[in-house]
Length: 333
Ligand code: UT7
Image: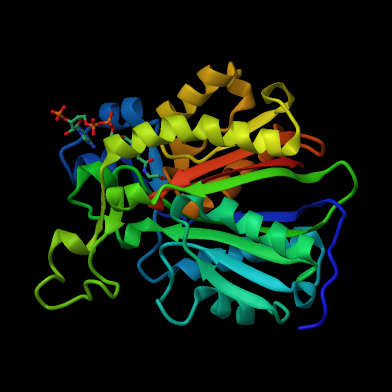
C-alpha cells in the first residue's frame, strides 16, 4: 500500500442504489402461518408487508443489483473504487466474505474488501468506516453495501420475530463531494451487556450445527423484543443528539430524520421528543418491514423518490440493532 496523505475535503454520497426481491409476504399470509392478525401487526409495528428472497436467490444477488445502481449513478468507474464494505449478518457463506464475491462480479479495484457484522446498525457503521478510510487517505472512493435476508434465519413458526423482518439491499459510493455537502458528524457505540437480546445460537462455532440441533428453534434468530424496544426508544434520540453535537448542529437544523425501520412506535417516540413533523421523518417499514442493514439506504431512496430528499437536505441517519449496536450520522445530501 502506498504512503497515505490525510484528505481534508468534504466526504459524502456519490451514488445510491437499492434492490428488494419481488416476492411479497403480507400480513394476511402470516395470519395463515402463525397465531397473529393484520390488526396486531399494524398497530404494534406499522408493518403491512415485506419482501422475501425467491428460493433460488442468494443475498448477494440483490446486493449486486443495488451496488450496480449506486455505481451507475455515481458515474465512477468500478476500478477506481478502492475499498468494498459489505454490511450484513446474513452473508452468502461464512467463507469467503460475500464482499469478495461482489468485488469480482462488479469489477471493483483492489483494496480493503470485507464483510462487517453490526446487525441492523451495519449500514451506518459501514458509512463511518468509509468516511474514516477516505479521511485517512487510505482510499479515495469506497463502496458500502448493506444487505440482509433475515428470511433465511427467521423461524416462521415464531410470531415474535417472523412478522418483523424483510429482505433487502442498499448501496452507496462514498467519495469527495462539493463544499457544503457530505458527512458532517458521526457517533457510534455498542452496549455488549445486551448481546444476547437478539441472537442465533446454533450455526457458528460456539454451537456448530449438528444432527441433534438442526431441527430445533436454536438454529433460528431469537429476540427479546420488549427489552430491545426499551433500549431503542432511548438510544435513537441520544445518538442523534450526539451526532449533531459532533457536527456542531442542533435538532432544528435537521430537515429529515432517517431512522432504522424496526417499529413505527420507536420512530414516533423520537418524533415526539424532537417535536418533529411527520413529513420530516421517513417511514418505509409499512412496505418492507425491518430490512436490517438495508434499512437506511432503502429509506433514503424512498425519501428521494417522494421528493423529500434533495441536494442540500440535512439528514439525521440513526440505527440500532443486535449487539447491541447503535450509530448516527448527519449527512447533507
Ligand atoms: O432491528 C432491531 C431488532 N428488533 C427490534 O427493533 C424489535 C423491537 N421490539 C419491538 O418492535 C416490539 O417489542 C415487538 C413488535 C417485537 C413486540 O411488541 P410489544 O408491544 O413489545 O409486544 P410484547 O412482546 O410486549 O407482547 C404483547 C403481547 C403478548 O401477549 P400477552 O403476554 O400480553 O398475552 C405477546 O404474546 O402480544 C403478544 N404477541 C403477539 N400477538 C399477536 C407477540 N407477538 C404477537 C404477534 N401477534 N405477532
